[in-house]
Image (cartoon, rainbow, N blue to C red; front, side, top):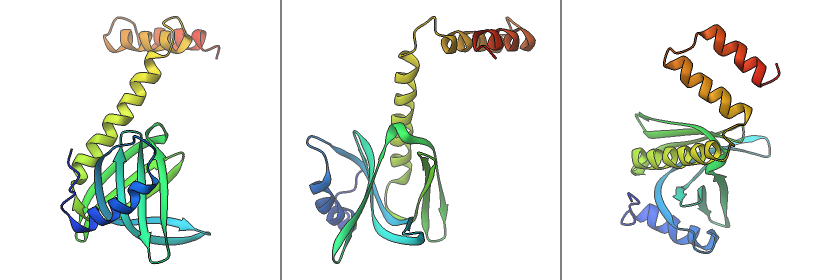
Length: 168
């Protein structure tokens, strides 16, 4: 766990955010920065924390009169990237077809947060793959792809069998 609870900015936002967590939900990672989003059709930047819990990625930003929050289930996150710029780290990911960005991250371990999110994304993929019956067309196409990758069948054989299995 790399959540820096000794950092004053993270600790303060975390105290407020805990009121909005689900019962039993645990915060495992977190970073502080500026969250870019659209509000009423306009671009908006909000300071706050991105918290990775055991259930979701959660943005929380305390405001003078209220707060902003947004929740992203790991199952909805399709890709994630981060990089270092002059003003700090930038974190971007796609969730449910929307691009989510946080910039000017100077507090918290971004690499640890990204690795945790990737782990949760991979966990989702493993669960969805294991839920497929072994004889489903998708499972059979995956098996054929493995045979193709091992050089046991040709690309043409793979494509023909894929079309047959998927009724294309």
